[in-house]
Length: 212
Image (cartoon, rainbow, N blue to C red; front, side):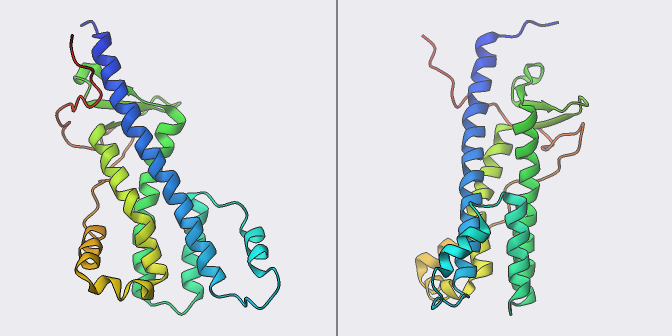
């Protein structure tokens, strides 16, 4: 059995920590954004002549819901209002993609991951308590981070489309909207014992320290 180069392994893990940190931060920011959308959506439809109405709303909603719960709340809110079927489908489509990314987040967060040096360190494995492996790359995490970064605004557009009518008509607004609605970068094909990507891309060596 070939010896593992310790420095190379540490480099691979540094790359993973960097990419996973960005990924988790984007998830947290999106969760906060979705909760803010819920709060603002409901608040804008309440009678504000009632004393403490906003404070009561915040008390009912609590300090914020986790991704699965806030996603369900958003779907129920849109279904309960006079929204089009197209808006409801768009919301469900976006939140479904977020849920798939959440599977990857939960798997790594609860089971950790390690560089597979037997395949050059480009792949990372995460094992659960049944020793079934999820395999992914740095590019997998980067793609998920990119998608999560646009989900909060796409959800807000589905909930409150009128806000964007004028801005989307400007050149900058149209360009921003085009970028938001690009095809998803993250391809969810996670199956126990199989891989997310068909082939491992070249190792990026993002965090490698210069050789002395």
